Image (cartoon, helix red, strand yellow):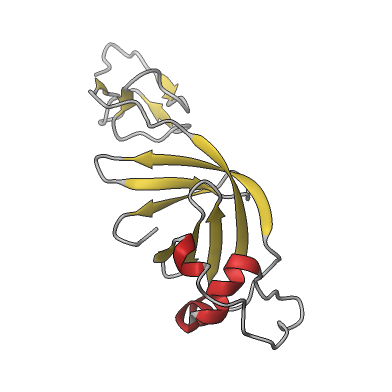
Length: 173
């Protein structure tokens, strides 16, 4: 608590060293030390974050979501705009025939190909939820982190502006 007319202004750093957290503060947020909610730091016994691995990947945005493919697991993820997702193992999507939809995509939209096309063309619910591609499939290097607690989830990077998606075990993202 500030007293004797002393005033302090501080900014929460983007990264705090070790396992130190500024309670109730966001990185980059500026605070006046004379406020009724003074700065409090706490040291918590938090495990180090899991290692980040990288893998070759593919990405395609759609009207109603996106599709991702990971080469290390040969898995396709269909992420829908309602924040749900479905995982397709290679044994599943490779068993589908090539995309059976023969009609061309509308102008300025894209029909998916390869594994994305197998799912999109053979699983009506996915095709209805996703619509057409907004661009063609693109290759990139995906970063992957698998967290175990306090809630298990997988963090996958996207090729767009450093964005990431967290896939929770309950089928939401």
